[in-house]
Length: 196
Image (cartoon, rainbow, N blue to C red; front, side, top):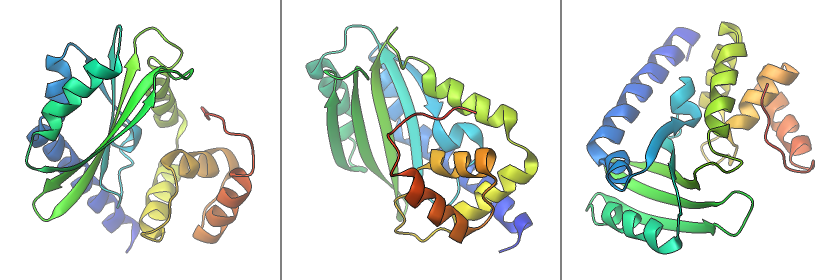
């Protein structure tokens, strides 16, 4: 696949992701529950490639596991939601409940990662700022490299979007073998959130 084809496919996937988001009604359910809803991740940055996922951060005051489950139950009632998973992080410094919904759209499965975050805590708006900063500093050549690497990556690679971004933008990684080595070394370091 040449770079022009990669860009065209990325644009098509971004448009499809927005259609899936609209059809699913997932963001609307959170808004109806009084949450502020923001798109984050690769969709926000225009870097959605082969992996079919939509990342949302939703914010409200006074989150309880019960209130978050009540909202998620409305989403799970949609017959196209075929799987729902929850991670309770309310007791951590992240003050959140992480939801993962698999949504059937045509013959495809799309993953929605919805992080329900307590307003005015450390991570309120953090990942939106991260995404916006990446877009601000990323050159067109780096964008092309990131998209190419995402399409070249093995389908079973469990690599995080931010690993591509940091490897390419901060360390100049430009090929799949370099990215593979970079991720192996990087994952031995203590975890941190990178913002350029």
